[in-house]
Length: 204
Image (cartoon, rainbow, N blue to C red; front, side, top):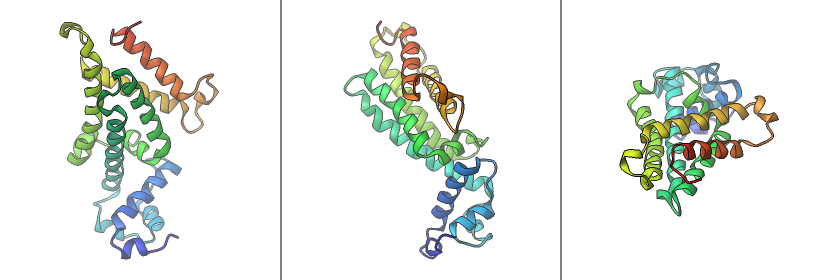
């Protein structure tokens, strides 16, 4: 059992979030319990209720923290579209894959737990920030086209997001993508390039 210093140092809330992210990684977002999260954090089963209303409240905080980190990674990867919008756009794809690989518990809480993002204002704001990065990137990519030929930026952002999520799901946790002749990064990049070229956002 972990040392109880997390509780005594006043970090119980974060200790529970970290323990839950690990549990989700191990068992999935639907199987973890507050009791087990408390045990992993080294506190009594009643202690989580000092900071969280219940299981879903804790799960939402794991997802919120995930979205905050996720948005920061996307922002850093895009870097205002430098040195070229397409290069920056492709970097965001790698950042997406890296986040899913490095923080799987948070990723599953964000996208596989069935949470209602709209029901939590802080969670919704964090999710919107991540989507805003993709929308801004899509708008930057479309800047080379006349206004009447630019596809809706939100549509492009959502399509790329869905494509990225699909690649993660295909290759994660022992799924069939492991038998693919190309890796996840190559699959995402090739799919994104085909899509962007079809919209006229990049040249032939």
